[in-house]
Image: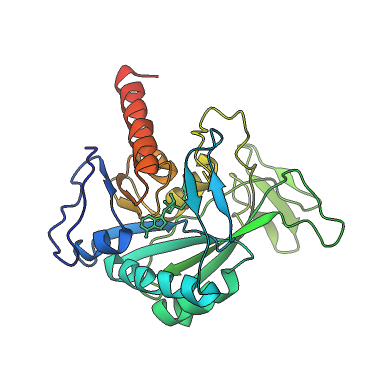
Length: 288
Ligand SMILES: C[S@@+](CC[C@H](N)C(=O)[O-])C[C@H]1O[C@@H](n2cnc3c(N)ncnc32)[C@H](O)[C@@H]1O
């Protein structure tokens, strides 16, 4: 279901998608206030980064504001009630990922510690990428951070993800191809699908010619959301993105068989995300 609507602040009457998903044009604080507590499995939040910039689409029309009169304090005052609502909305097994960069990540870490609890912190994921542009005055800034917190301590859902090859000498393969090393006490077996993923993710930035590119400034690559969604949810779970922009989270959630819920206050974002989800729906119903 793709429907646009404005939420009534505090009414708690908004319905959740039973199957499929929903995109809403609203301020996310108003929209979240209308949703029932403990109803969402996974929230990905990609808010403004406190860059001080005006983001423009390539056609120069759409502007995405990331300027804060009142400075960092105003930015944190904007985020605090929204992160508090996200915590209320998460199920006891739920997880939130908050995506930022060097501009404000350290301050938002402290804020998240306040809202969720210092001991509810799970990870700081470093998304490392190689884009053009290198400063001569400092090391090139080529990573974003995703701060991960759980609703309950140790009660969260998590699936180990695996990538790459083992970096160890003397690795053998047995008759069925399983990797092992000989040790004094016998064979030490390794997982056949490779080592468990670490908190440093090397993933390409969205290329200017990528098929998934919508033209929305700050659009994130689907490969990043695939990891987030696969690690912290199951098929049929409800995945929400209240800063959904062009709908990357929603498109990936849909492809991976999750229910999805999106919100953005920009009509241009909601239009793009709706078109993206409709295209995906048409492509899926036509088959591969
Ligand atoms: C960094 S962009 C998200 C990009 C998105 N992850 C994607 O892949 O396209 C942040 C989005 O938050 C939206 N936004 C900012 N403040 C908001 C608010 N109070 N309520 C709803 N959306 C908001 C902006 O309109 C913008 O689309």
